Image (cartoon, rainbow, N blue to C red; front, top):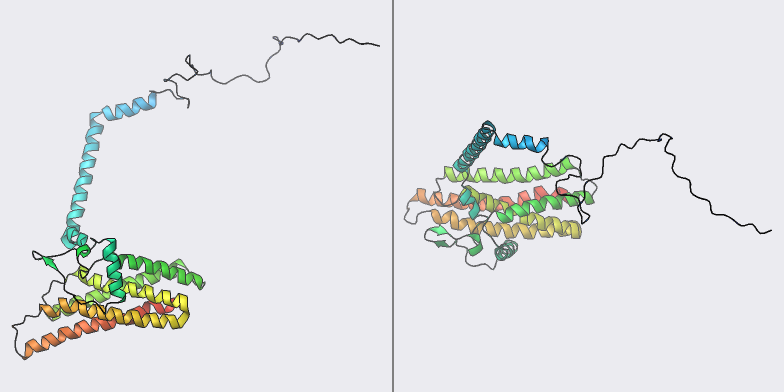
Amino acid sequence: RNFQTKPRARAGPHTGDPLLFADTSSAAPPMNNQGYYTPGYNIGGAPVGGPEDAGVNNLFADPMASAAMMYGSSLANQGKDIVNKEISRYVSVNKLKYFFAVDSKYVMKKLLLLVFPYTHQDWEVRYHRDTPLTPRHDVNAPDLYIPSMAFITYILLAGMALGIQKRFSPEVLGLCASTALVWVVIEVLVMLLCLYILSVHSDLSIFDLFAYSGYKYVGMIFTVLGGLLFGSDGYFVALTWSSCALMFFIVRSLKMKILSSFSHNSMGAGATAKSRLRLYITVASAAFQPIIIYWLTSHLVR
């Protein structure tokens, strides 16, 4: 049999039955003839220029609010000036900038001088119109950039050494950092006390002492690296080398600062005794460096 299928007509939607879900969505945003939303429509739902914007505009338009904001900003500026003034009483910001006036060429020369100072001939700091040249222009000038970066590098290296030995913890690393910083502060205070007792009038400032004392961090990094790479034998070889180099550097540098301040026309047994004491202070400051280097690095290499 041949059956012929007749196309069925589609039934129209039932208009009398209620909808299962009510359409609660908002109407579509108005669109222009190019198919984009009109500029005044906010897709987030809140119209532009609504109550929120009106409240903000009213806040800035209120003269009392503007006066309060101006008064608060003036108080903040006054507090900033007071803090800067109090800091300037104890720390000269301009003088501190002098110790960070370095460049990459100076850093390389200074590091080579700290590692191998034996061939350096001229140790005198140069001046221009009674003002010492900045470190970038004079390799003999002390700086605080190398000690600061060396201190941070030493802490990172100490954390790596402790991690290799499975002894790392934030408390141990914090103790290592605080101990290294406290020893430098103690050394600088002792030097200041000795210079005051002996009435040494020189151009050595507290920043100079922190710079010369902070150069030991370079030797500490060299010592720890020697221990990590070559074991205990490498540690003691690096310790001996860095200690001798640092002692030589400290004696030659402080000799130009402390001993040269002694007046050449001072005569008598008392003047000779004071000159000898200044020499002892210089040598003692240099001899103290290997002890601190060993104390701060021996526990990192096992």
